[in-house]
Image (tube, rainbow, N blue to C red; front, top):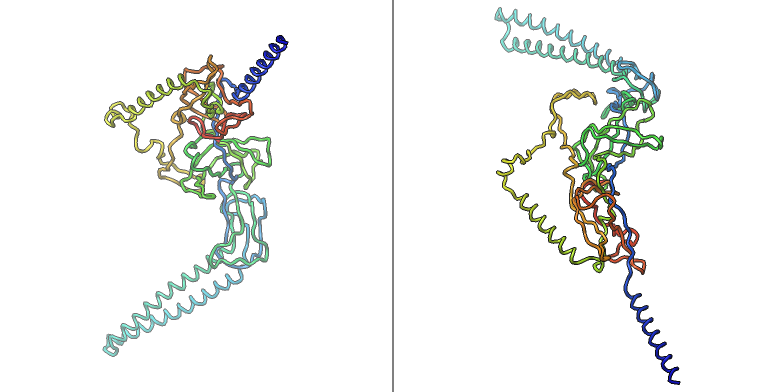
Length: 456
């Protein structure tokens, strides 16, 4: 009986201890970590945008006179030469205007001849004291008036002849007709604005992509940067171009300020056509064989219970000292900066280009052209923080100086970490969730961009 009581008591005690350990263990969250490595690799930083392919030179051919289109000598896709006749407006009324002007000229000539005779007769009588000074002055005024009318009539005749010449439409440039907007028999009216008859592009082997880049990325774009783009017509082909112009005029699209960027493209294969939509990637920075870390590691923020507090405090003290030193360097006197040659000019040297003759758009340019300052990737740096797992099973921070970022990886310029080192990119507990509202798989709450370089 006594032995049974002892066995029963031991069993109850063991079950109590087991229950306690089981529930205590379940109340304490167990974390599983996701790791990645510091690695070497290349970084390409691109700015993406959408643009439209256009010809370098495109001319809308209009008319300065009204009338009925009587003949068309060019159609869609016609190749035309400068000075070639491409359309004819019915000249009937314009020819009649010339006849009216000629008749008016004959009338004015007769009036001028009559006023000359009158002045000669009045002058002769005045010399013989048979006519008054007043009548002599009136005859002189009539002659001068008719002389002015003569000039006006000649000008009217010239204007009528010029209008008749405008009835014949000539091609202003060598090129290809990409649009015809009139038909034979159609009446065009040039009373208030010049109606467009044709659109002619100069050379389809030289094209340009006109794209808009928002203000947050325009600082990374510079003249002569390389760009690639694709079009829906040839999804497997990558076309290459070069940034040739960054226009200053802001373009507001859905309350976002954008700037127009022109990219020159060779179209020797004649695949590209005006109006195509281009998906553009501008390569703004490139570096090879850099030490890099995943952006997920820079975004990861562990729960407080996983952090080694002693290591974190030591790192924080070092960071504060580093910031203090940086602040002292930034507050150096201007005289010291000038003395050390570190003072930057108020206007970047590349902001104003030398005079040149730019005939790209048919404009002879002999004055300096403004160009924005070039993008310098070395200036695009910042600070970041990653976490490593120490021998105690706790996380300790490693502060890094960051450089370029392509959206997936960020360059680091520090000797603390080396390629192959393990870093934590995420942590999930036994309940399948991560504290601070982070994604248990990525360790990210979708926060800020790490480090320096911008990307898209």
